Image (tube, rainbow, N blue to C red; front, top):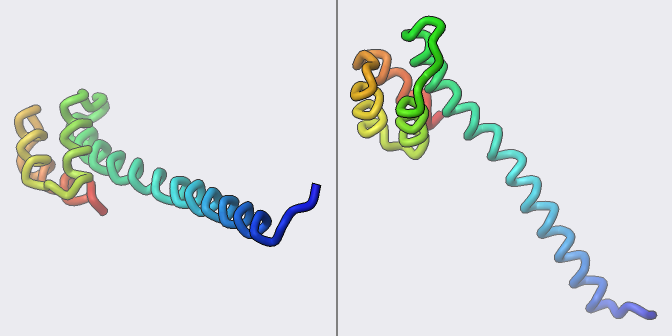
Length: 94
């Protein structure tokens, strides 16, 4: 079976696209996780040894999207002080 230059170019293009897609996913996933983790860690420091409830995790995910105001609202509704909520939501999108 002979491959034509056109087929070879197409295969190379597909492999390049696949490598870029997989590489991009690997680079962005850890950063997103670390940002949410920083937000949750900030809240858990206030709780002192307690694990953050799901409401805190969801509020931190909202903060990750850049909506700091809703992040603060979600955290304070869960019993986090305003100061801690503000700091935690500020670190979420970074």
